[in-house]
Figure 1 (cartoon, rainbow, N blue to C red):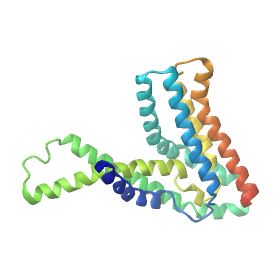
Figure 2 (figure 1 turned 45 degrees about the vertical axis):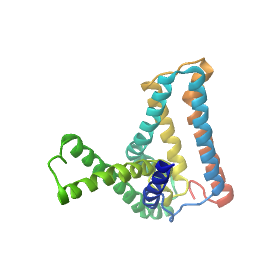
Figure 3 (figure 1 turned 120 degrees about the vertical axis):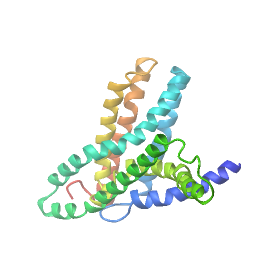
Figure 4 (figure 1 turned 90 degrees about the horizontal axis):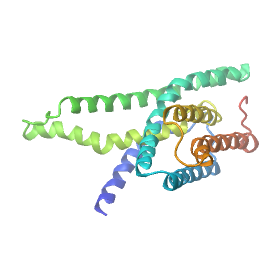
Length: 248
């Protein structure tokens, strides 16, 4: 399809810098292909289970609400990480042995730079959206070179900026702002904290979904419990296969 032949290269162009900035190697990070495969499998199964529950007990409107909610969570998760992350990291370093705290603190520069890049991305996109919305006719009356100069940045924003933002948000949610650079166990710990914070927001915000009680409980707590179980398994695997402990 012509659209896919155009979209795929565009996503690749946005994907490479997003991964380079928001999913970095080095520091204390440990690569485990099995963990990556299990995480992807859990994500796919979670999406399929959610769709199945809404297909059986929901309506078209419920599916649209769920899609909007999932997109909102992708954007909100980095914001929650910016708020709760420093607290969790500070407690994590405080819990580490005294002789390792200086080393862990010395690695904080990489997550800090990642936060800076993400905030800069959001600021540029927000400023561009504001400029376009506040001046909907900003391109009217421009001709020739000036139209080209004004139209090209707007086109780049639409075609590259938005995919880059969503890919960056996905990588930030996965890598927790490259906190594995500080300690390999930090992303798993932060993931558990974040998933339960989001679960509380979902319960207090959108309330219980439709369907019998077992379906409601699965919809609300299936994701957090499965993510928690996977994170605990990841921490155990780090300890048994790679010799990495939370305090080590």
